[in-house]
Length: 211
Length: 211
Image (cartoon, rainbow over all chains, first blue to last red):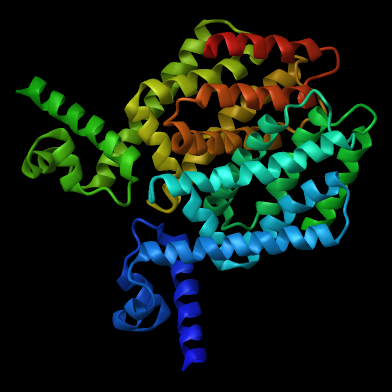
């Protein structure tokens, strides 16, 4: 029974993710989700009293997935520069492969749904990305003329735009190619003198990964 | 009577824009719009049979505003480089100052609302921006190593992200500052050799404009 409840809960979360991605959060109804999950509305309400609560569960799963991602990258003992590039590609891979992760990302873009808490999902990214960018500057990869907070905010914002457009244009099919283009355009202007070859190397490697 | 009908129509369009910006298109109802416009639902239906038709009217107004913007920039006889930078700032100014223009921009981000036609709003930007970028390369401002289609697509995508985040974080208050940050980060990596000073000049000028 406990196991069965877990399976139903997971089914609701995945079905909601599919519906939110297709219709957006605001236009999705509990009936849409119950249909997608092939369960009764009663069974839905047993697990979640509202679609807001489902959305929060989806966002929590993304937060956990990001913690796992950070731990995985740390275990790989990459340079700070590799970690920055790798993180962008691993997040893109999660969006492509994991419907719940993708839905969480989409929810963050749906402005005003929860008021303040959603705005905080952007803030939540600025700190770790600023931290990473600072490390790349300290380690001599990125130029000391770059303001880490400004670059971090720019990367988070650009990533938001890339996800949004990639979902509309290709259902995330071209997501990693767009991330590769982002680095190809941005890196030459931010790398410290003497690191110019890193841009070419990174993009070759990223191109191989996306192929 | 004709004049009065025009005023009511404009009232509906502006009120809908306010509602769409606040709640998103999917969550906005005809009742919300009638309340905002302070008219009856009957008067609403006389002018627009559905909120989709209002959205289309809003998007058409933006298309016209963009045509006017292009004509204005052309009349100024700017260099291709100045035109590229100026266009980004003028579009930001329109978003900040014109609620209908802002709503049209927000509608383009609301994925899947109209299916294909919305995806075309991104495509609609790629052509003119590619054209502008090509001119900046031909005129020697931007490096010949830059692929115009890739840079254009990147700029459109980044602008989308900037609008999205700026709306959530500051109700467009920091929009032009974010555009300035974008150029400050991107320009050093894309300018042709010998044009390095253009980045500093552009950003000083942009900073003065945003101040």
